[in-house]
Image (cartoon, rainbow, N blue to C red; front, side):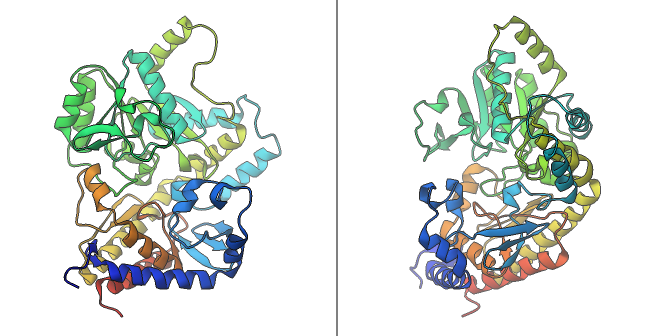
Length: 459
């Protein structure tokens, strides 16, 4: 086997053998889902309502019957410990009781009417108290919130450039679909129907590379830097010591606004990475879990931005601004958001999540060392990843090269067959308030067995 190809330190024949066995096991255990898949999910392109659902590593889609807390049950009767949690959308568990009560009550009073409710007023106060910035707007997705914030940043600064981090994830925002190739910014490969060159108005630099950031800001024409506190949607990359202080210093020195997108890093604490580590953004964006699983997002901004927006609104012609959508800030979402902020995203909940996430990360690390594999595990609060490459990783380029798709697919499928669900897009796991020690230990045990098998220590 000396000349056989290797992925993540594992010979490919072991990966292929494991995947074949696990695929057969999965299919045999799910006859109802298999029958539905064979019949075809008519009416949907490729058989599913969202193309991202095709990214799951199973031979065919698992069909969900119900989910509650930290578990998910499919129509074939298998209950899994859920560490994917809707890829962060259900980060605080499936259907938290306070959210269920809130949306049930609001549903009887109306679903949308483009006017505020008492919940709306209460949420505004909660957002200021929780996240610090004085002015807030509601959107339906983090993609929308980021898009609106970037539009406003360009408007208030009179500048047209933005800076993003290589390997970043900010939803479906065109301005961020830029990557580095041979040190040069290019449109991200794989984009459908892209008719403009996104690099005309977007510069891309590596995360943790302060020299590159300084050079990108030097011309004085950048409206906004949009950044995650840590890269989270490729392979996790944490900020190096002093990075965020320097990011804030450099943006202020060049009159550049700073947008911090906490949609994934809200796992860090009740006020996100921003509050825990004292970041001082001009814009703050949070989507996915803010309403307990109901589609909603928020974006906040400073007094200085609000004052400049007042001037722009006073001077502009009547008509659409390009900011906001009709169903944003609907009363159902605001009721769910109020319940989430006041009763679900509590200090006690985060203390539990942090403790068990530490147990999970430590357990995965021990399993990796026991198998002798060149991998590592790390976490950002309640968010944990194992990465099938040495670490720590420093930037987006390293993160993208660390992926081993075939290897990860085999591991993910093996975990499903052992009763554990993790995110399909990368090796992300979340601990929620309903997660138990038994759930964590089940995942660690399943992962440890698969790691040993891939390392060749099991037949």
